[in-house]
Image (cartoon, rainbow over all chains, first blue to last red; front, side, top):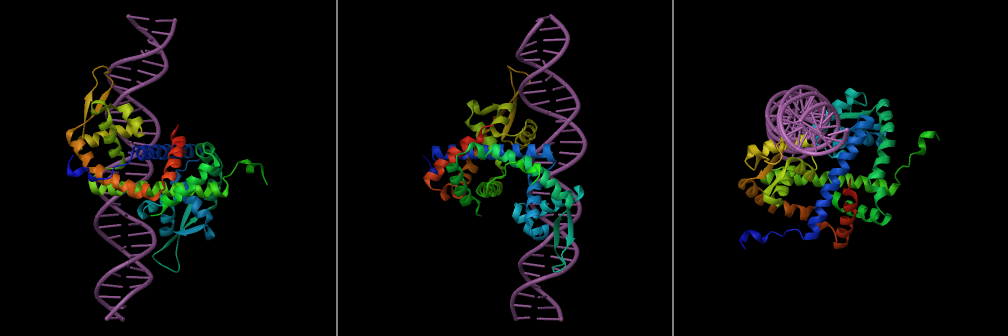
Length: 151
Length: 151
DNA sequence: GGAATGTAGTTGAATCTTAAACTGTTCTCC
DNA sequence: GGAGAACAGTTTAAGATTCAACTACATTCC
């Protein structure tokens, strides 16, 4: 017994919950990503970007806001938008009122690609997550994730 | 109303739970990864590898089994183990009974690095996850993740 | 008005990940 | 015992991500 033992460890149960969580996370994400990629050529992050844009006023968002909304670094978003632009799903427009800024704008092709991808993707989400849970479990899961998502 | 509308969409509540889940996942993972990296120079995956090895018989595992245990592709594991070997935390040993195979073996340095990293990391996990939840919520979270982790 | 500081976004290089092809070994089954 | 399939692991190259440095505009505050 040394002085280093004073860290509070996780209890056995907490440990097992934590490991389940890590495995579930990693499995859900990689399966959904693989399927989405195979069926529509979009990664999960790309899909998320298109969803955010499609729901925004004028189907456009400033880079910074978009980065926050899909939780990626500015730099990663820049590269990602460049790729989406190459695919023709997004286009950049300079901001007139803040000349540092750009809008990322959803194109018609991007909207169509999102529509096509969504059907299959939603089915997988349902199958991979919600079909496995009771309504009560979903309710608690919502509360829990609500508590965990806050920074 | 077209024929394409027959996909069962997510209900409003499900949708909001799903989005919380995605945000929580991504925040938890990136914060823990950042902190772990800063405090100990290990990524979350590297940490997971060292944990698996430390708990295995003889502090060693076959590559395939290790890859399954931390849920990464064989290829990624190969690269990752190469890096860990360069850091001196793991060494490879050829398998005597199956000449295709290798053991990844935890070194003394690797064990020490894991020990150092664990203290801070566990504290963050507690702080980032368990401290935000009631015992009941933890219990349900465990059931839910148990259901979701299965392939 | 202008120096200092903060913010938006991009760039480039190093690092990491992925996917497919490949080597060498073991297993199956006739 | 040997052909063929399956398995363990690595390699390679392309593509993605990260990190720090950088440009350009906006804000603040004297």
